[in-house]
Length: 337
View: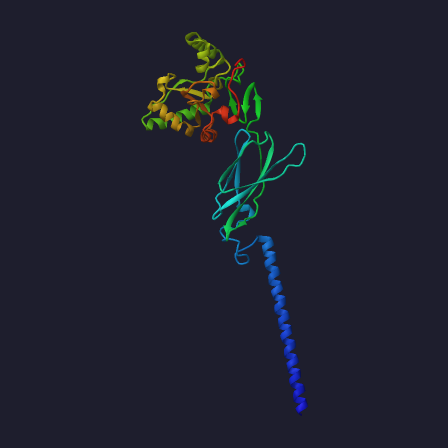
């Protein structure tokens, strides 16, 4: 009987050990399954705070589609990359490369910055550039990155020169100065968009007690012959060239420029001149020949001469503080100069 009891106890112990081993196997299998699931989740979605203490907050982690940025050609051979707002980001990395027309190896360059807008200059004219960005957060002295954004591409065509109907364009901007002339038969009058923009500006100026009017708008090639010769007769050719364009080189022939209120030096510093310089960009105009830029534009300071570019382009150029010549990297000199 005693032997039977011992045998029974041994059987129970063996059964218990077997069951315990089976339970451990099942728990072990479940643990492996959970780990595999976490690994798969990380591969699909990236690290999360629960799985990686360096991952940062949920508001920081961002899917590819959420890292957004814009590209714009802002000056000669210059592209600006502007990052959209990303909560909790401490900085970003920008990768960029050019499509090489000769198909030789082109390295992908990477720049780290904590600025919202980054400017890339000295780019290759007419080349296609590819950009992508990712943001990062610094946690425990380590950088934790988001996924890379989708790639965006832009063609550096700001300085691309085009001749359309005998007129010279850089990008979509018509350029007329001492270097670039217009055909004799170009132009028929002020562009309607210029007229409408001036009317809006003059109306708003009146609300501020400022009266604006046009003293000179469109001038044909033939009229410029008379205007220029008058200045030569009055002051001589050298001085005339500082204040008046030779025929074919006048912006007034484009139908996009206006002289406001007066063409006398005494206009400078008047309430009207101050208001015009401060506000004209809001209506799509720029002061075409600003102070201390005669060596660049070819003309002395003319606070009355405004050039229409459209609201978006005028604002873009005004923000740079550059003249059209500086913005496009071009000259304004007659051939014999």
